[in-house]
Length: 398
Image 1 (cartoon, rainbow, N blue to C red):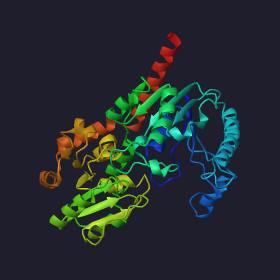
Image 2: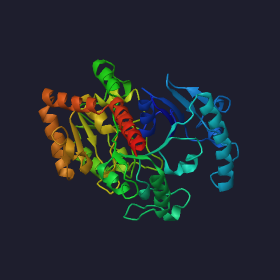
Image 3: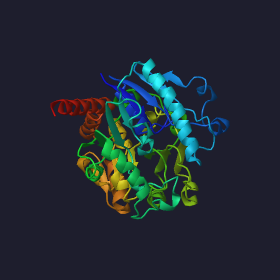
Image 4: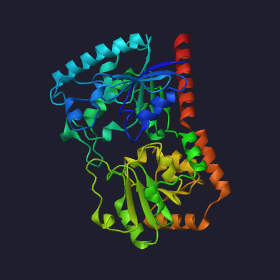
């Protein structure tokens, strides 16, 4: 059993869960984890984004092995004043050290999902530093220096890259979700491992066995061509959706997920009667929607960013056994044979159409489900533990 101080990218109370919450909960299956959520302010409480009781009760128990700390930034305007942010960080560090002592975590493994949280390195008595590279930060817009931000071309965000480089060079272990990212990060650290996302396999298995059908999808005409996940204009190919929904008005195109930040759905899609946006759902509810898709889709634009992500939904789709059609992503080529990969919009249409005509193929269905089971979050956690054990053994022998 290991002990982790996990500095997360989100909150466990969030309706939608991403890699940060899933890795933390997976690790808590056989290890003790103190999960540190994103710091919050009075302004977030005032606008209802965070619960006010977290101020008085900043620590809570999520399950047997998982404890959650919600840091509060006492001093306002810390996003604009570096000195205020630093003071807030030290105040929270003082309380965090108290929690570590209370939980008996003397030398935890420090796990960072965010290179901008490097403040904790060397300050919590960690015996190992793990950096889990969930995003390619050299492509990301930078909140502090927007003039250096990635604008969708080949520009590199040098500010982000330099911050991440320092974390990479100090880390004992680095995990990346795609092979291409592994290759890039190995320039700065030889101990980089491929660790794709997984799936809550039991959650999807229970949904398949259940007769429950959510009310907002019950009356939608079949066939349903579905997408589950964040609707982000930087990733979703709205031109492809417009083309498909126009040429096949008898199909229902269903989107289950939140609309990301400033994403605006084009009116040509919003006005269509065969396109449905059902909104964000709780993580536990999503399988009950996905199992009703006649074809699961990933209609992403083909960009530098989408070629370098391992989308969480792929194994969730596979867990239902349903047919899957995606735009071209090289990181999914190893699944060819159980999923369909389209190179252009006409081929995408053709593959959706052929999947509908083929109907349920028991052999393919079982293959998909078996692959999903192999890629469960429990198996991911076991792989992490094995890698840590190997590194510790190497350190002892060196």
